[in-house]
Image 1 (cartoon, rainbow, N blue to C red):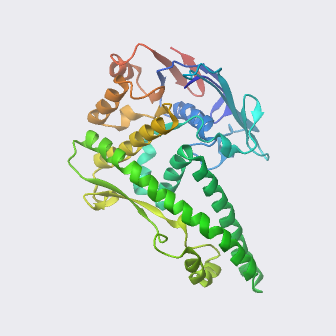
Image 2 (cartoon, rainbow, N blue to C red):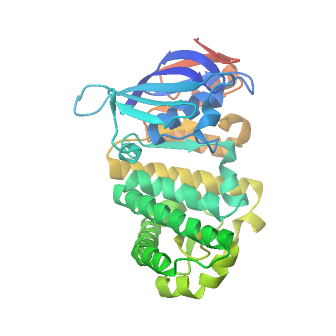
Image 3 (cartoon, rainbow, N blue to C red):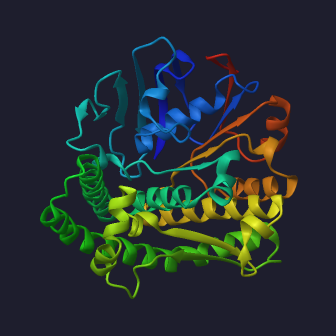
Length: 371
């Protein structure tokens, strides 16, 4: 599978752009702030129907415009199936639209996993530095691409959680008691969903961690032992009982304070937190290993190589890590690749012996021209 072309209208800093791609390596060259990363984000949008960098869809609309469109044509499937066109669009004040060959999905979630993608970005170390929400979102996104049933569980759990939190807030606002029977009804539905989410996360980590450890050892010469652990209150506990024990506290805080939406994935190096004890280089190796393991698992499960998006890796990574990534490129471990850089000469030097199928684009303040 590969992305043959991309068409943008009023997406971020682009008024309009039309690009046709190589099936192997595509390079976006330009100064910082020119819009290189926005092109990667448009591709990410086509795969996961959301931005990798902004929390709300409306932030992807170009300033002064009322809508955006990102459209991509995917082809190159091994069964010689015809190319498919995916379009994501949003108009201010309206619901986001996602279409496949001009036909809207009944649910946007039906699209997730059809066109897998992996992004390696300078912001990846936020997974280490920031709070548990970032790590949950990362693993939830990966598991949703791998397992549609997990995505459905997550959606249903999140919807019920919103209902429960709304009820808790309403009870406090009115200062006149609350409908506890309704709360217990929500809890009755929430409990099995929460327990299934936790079990699936545990099962996933058993499969994912060995892949991650192997990639880290290759990046860091195996000098440290790295581990991933899943931190949750639920294994071995009664989720329904936990909800009842926390009910008074939940009413006071107007939110649900226990459950898988509060869980965390702990990153350890030699049994110590990577955040506190890992050097900058070790942290970079840690998150790159996470992404390489993600790529390998998606490729194996989906039976197609995900799109690989590499954002400013030549500026942000040392020579050792770049060399390892380029070895994987040379060995054709990856399929179609999109990368950004500020210097064409450096890009050409690094990629010179890796492929003859390279397409280069110059990006300047929201305009793109092929070199």
